Length: 342
View 1 (cartoon, one colour):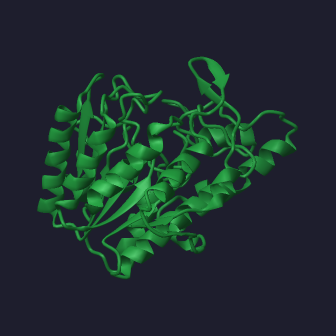
View 2 (spheres, one colour):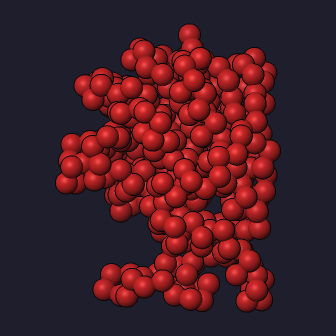
C-alpha cells in the first residue's frame, strides 16, 4: 500500500492547548506523524511518496471563501496586534448574538472557531495546506485505478473542520475535500466512514444536505465526549440529504464486540448505498490507552477493522485523523492497513 506523507506537517507545532482549565502541550503534535511513519517503514507497508500541490480550487469547492482567507492570514493578523501568545478565541457569536464577521482578529477568530482548545500558531496554514494535498494525492492515485487502497498520512487532521469553522485540531477537512474531488472527477457515489473516537462534526456539517456522499460515524456519545453538540443518533441528514447520515454514539467503556457490531451495520449501509469509493477517516483514538478517549479497543482489534472494511471489496482511501501520542499509535494505524491488505 502506498503512503503519502509530507514533512510540512512539522510546521504545525503549536505549544498551547486549553485542557482541563490549563494550558498544556497539545496532544496533537508532530511526533504523531513520526510514530505512524516509522511503523509504516518498519513493517514495509509499501512506498512512501510526497504529495503534489493541488492549489486552492479543491478547497474552495467545499469550504467558505471567507473562512479560507481567514486561515491564510490569521497568524499574521494576530502577531500584528502585539499579542505574545498563540492565537486562541476568547469570545464567540453565541445564541441570539449577531452572526457578522468582525474586523479585529480577536473577534474574527471567535467567529470562525468552534472550540478554543485549538490555537493557531506560526506555520499552521502551511501545514494544513500540505495536509489537504496529502489527501488529494491519495484520491488521485485511487482514481488512476492502479491502487485498491491508499494511505494519506494527513497531519493536521481534518474531520472537525466544518464549512466555515475550525477546531478539534482541524483546519481544512481533508476527507471531505477528497470526497468532493472524487465527485468532481466522475465518481457519483462516495461513502465516508469515520471511525475516529470523536464525532466528525465538520464532515457531517459539509454533507448534511446532500445525497451524493454518505457519511457514517462511530464515536463517543456527545453527552460525554467532544465535540458534545453533534453526533446524536437522530441526526440523519436534511432536505435531499435525509437518510445519508448515520451516527452510532457509544458510551464510556465500550468494548470491541459492541463497537464492531456498529461497524458491521455501517458497512452494510455502505453496501446498500452502492458506493463506488470509500474514504475512511482513520482515527485510532478508540484504543484503550488513548489519553483523551474512553473506548477499550486493543491493538489486535484494528487488524479486524481493516479486514472487515476490505470485505466490501471497494477501493478505499484511508485518511489519518486522530490517535494521540503514545507508542501504540503507529501499531494501531498500520494494523488497520495490514488487515485491509491481508
